Image 1: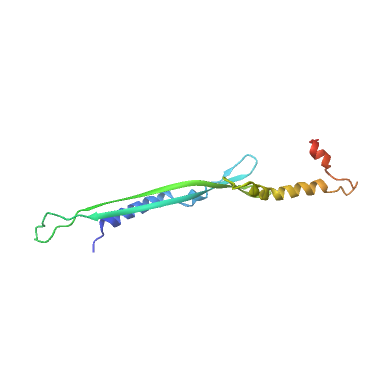
Image 2 (image 1 turned 30 degrees about the vertical axis):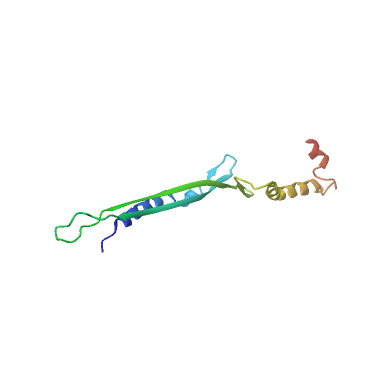
Amino acid sequence: MPDHPIEGLMKSTMDSLKEMIDVNTIVGDAVETKDGNVIIPISKVCVGFASGGSEFNSKEKSEDGGGGKFPFGGGSGAGMSIQPVAFLVVGKDQVKLLPVHQANSLERIIDNVPELIDEMVKAFRKDKKTGEPEVKIQDNISGE
């Protein structure tokens, strides 16, 4: 049985979609900064696809007396949306995921807790020789 015209229509649309979308669309190309950090964009891709067609009655008769081949009318289309979601920042000592949209302040606080703990540990750490704090809290407040 010969291929139906809608099959060719769908195949060409799907081939076009395949050319547009690949892994680099979702996880973008890495960009290296001057200080050695690498930033990788991450996106959300949404794709919609529709195809349809119809055969119409033929008023013409074929030469052999049987019915003629019905004419075909059809169409297909696709739409694509790309939305940035986050940036993955890879540094020398750490990896961070920076979302484009943070839902609320609580998420920001939770994300910054490890850095806050590190700063508190540094502030209260004592020098082994003198027994004095390495960094005085007063110095941190005044900025000296």
